[in-house]
Structures are given as C-alpha cells and as structure tokens.
Length: 464
Ligand SMILES: Cc1ncc(COP(=O)(O)O)c(C=O)c1O
Image 1: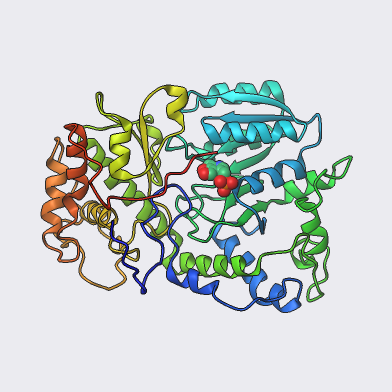
Image 2 (image 1 turned 90 degrees about the horizontal axis):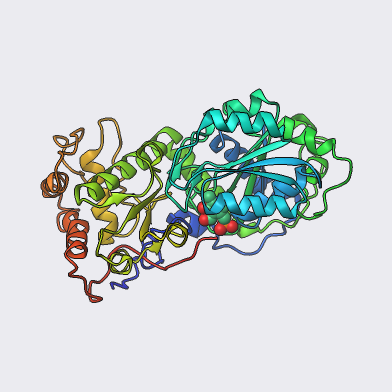
C-alpha cells in the first residue's frame, strides 16, 4: 500500500470509500487547525455558529425550518429528535427497510413510544398503498423513515412518503444520514419536520456533529408536550428558547447574547462551516449530479462484470452500492480487493454482500490519486452526460469530450472497454481505469491473493 503523504490534498491513507467517515477536503482539515476559541463567546455565535447554521439551511433546502448542529453523530440526531418530540405512549410508525430503520425503532422504544413497525423486505420497494393503510389504521403522531438505507444501498421515495404522511397529519421524521448533500433532499418541499443527519458522510466534514432541522410543526409538537423531554442537553426545544432569534421564531431578541443548550465543539463547527461553504460553492445541482453519475458508472461497471447488485433496480442508491459476491466467490476475497466492508444485511440474508461508497468528495479528483478513486472517476467521466463539470482540481483535461455522453455499451466487457479506451485519452487516468476490472476479474476467477495492494480502501467498519 502506498503510504506517501500528499501534503497538497489529504493526510488520510488510504482513501475512505466506506459510507462514512468520508474524505475531508483540505480546507476542512485546515479549518480545524486553529487555537481554541470560547464556545460561549458572542463572537463564536456570530462569526462561526450562525453562518454555519444559515449555510446548512441552504443545504437542507429549507427556509421554514431551523437547522441545529450539536455535538454527536447521526444517531445523536435521531435520538435528539425522537426524545424531544415523542412522549411516552405516543403512537409512532417506523418504516424499517434495513439496519438503520431498526435503529430508529429501538430509539423510539426507549423514548417510550408505542411503536408500530412497518416492515419492508430488505432491498425491496415500499408498497405505498400498504403504507398508507397502516398510517390510516395507526394514526401515529410521527412517521419515521430512512431516506438512504446504508445497510442495503437503497434510496426510498421520500417525497412520496412525505405526501402520504402529511395527508394524515403526522409529523415526518427522515433519516438522511447517508444522503444529505449527496442526494437531493428537499426539506420544505417534502414536508420533513425533523431532518436528521450527521457531519461525516456526504457533507464531507469530520465526525462529531449531529444535525437536525425542525419545522414549525415540529416546534409546535414540542411546545404542546405535557411533560418536558427527559433529555436536557439534547432537548431541541431548548434551542428555540435559548438560541434562536425572534426574527426566526425563537425567543432570543435579535442581537442579544444567546445561550447554547449544549457546549458546541468550536473546531468541528469551523470544519463543518468550511465543508458547507465548499458544498454551496460547488452547487447542490452539480453535487447531486456528480453523485448520480458516479453511482451510475459504478453500477454499470459492476454489472458489466456480471456481478449482481443487491437491491431492486428501482432503489439503487447513488451514494452506497451494495452488490453480491458471485456464486463460488467468498465475500472475503472481493473484500480483500476492495478492502471495503461486508454489508450488515449479509447476516440476516445469509448472502455475501459487499458495499462500496462514494460520498462527499471521495469520487472526485480532489482526492489523492488512489487507484480506486481514479478507476471510478474514469468511469464517471466516461459515462458523464454533457453539462457535468469534471471535478478535476488541476484543471487537466478529463476523458475526451467525445466519450462524454456515451451510453455504456451492453455486454460483459463492453462498458469497461469503453472506460479503458476513454482513459487512454487522459494521461491523468491512464493506468488506472482498468484496475477495478482487473480486480473483479481476478475475484470472479477465484484468483485472488492477499498480495493485491492498494485497491480501494480502507478500514473495515461495522454498521450500527
Ligand atoms: C442511514 C444511517 N442512519 C444512521 C446512522 C448512524 O449514524 P452515526 O454512525 O453517525 O451515529 C448511519 C451510520 O452509518 C446511517 O448510515
């Protein structure tokens, strides 16, 4: 494995292609490199926290909701939202399509909710009619769903579900931990009352911040509680009471000192600020497009090698790809090459699955010249449709314009032949496009050795 430190880009080796944490753009790393500041000083609120909050509102695509960033991770966001709004005995319907739906079910159980689980076979689409009937029957105070179920590499139709939830007057709680800032997530348009995410995935910020948006209906539900929430530090209502200015519906007169309900990590907030700025500079449409093109290219490559994707075709995620190891090939062999992780669904489904993720800036030439990255980037460029900027920070020409817009040929090797010939037009990517193909060919012929170096990434991690 190449352990060269690339000062100009990132210090992390090797590249993280797991579904979080993800690679950090260098300005994000730099933002953490500063002396300590006082988190309760007005200047921190005004110069750091408030601008981050406002930038996040744009990324959440909301003008009605308030975005709150707290210390924690994705599950802190889920738990803070659940405990802040749900009172013991409240009926809640939890849509469970994988590991993270089950996580929300457990959180809701602990919050004392009367939970109805709407179970969906993993990797299979929702039956919206059945869902609506369940909601009609249960009459829940809140419905929760995972937008992008990381454990199975699936994206569920959050807009449609939002319409159903709103038809029945329930609160809509959406886990966007592995989608926000990678997939299009429209907080206002989809009627999301609690949009819950974490900093370390598509936002490309360090692990350590839990982020939740709260809609006006969400605030009202908290204000109508009979008893105060059983959490103090993570009671979201305290943000309205102590931090949000009156001009945005809070209780603090504009310009007056605010009190953070929990001490905010100043370095992580600065890093989140830098990450948010980069996202808005890239532009949400381009960012979503980049993930979409990367996801499509990756799937085309997988399928052209006759590997089978796990989820139903209608659900395949553009941020996390989950595919089956071919019959006769041990998942471990493929993992060895990808050094990725086993999909946690494999335990339950007794099927060997592999996941690979391209979130945030991972699938961009701004990351170090790792072979896997460039293999995927090559694919991205070759399958890119016109109008997509190549995320190439050096400004070097990417794959020639003649291949942009081509549809991958069908057939086992067609797509990769196209990738390979495309890459040959780019000195940047010349040696790398065929790496993925070689690895899988090696895997599918059972010819895998532990000597295969530096392919993909990284640290195995468990989900959950
Ligand atoms: C969809 C989803 N929800 C929740 C979580 C939990 O987030 P965290 O690990 O940041 O606590 C994850 C983590 O991977 C996730 O992918």
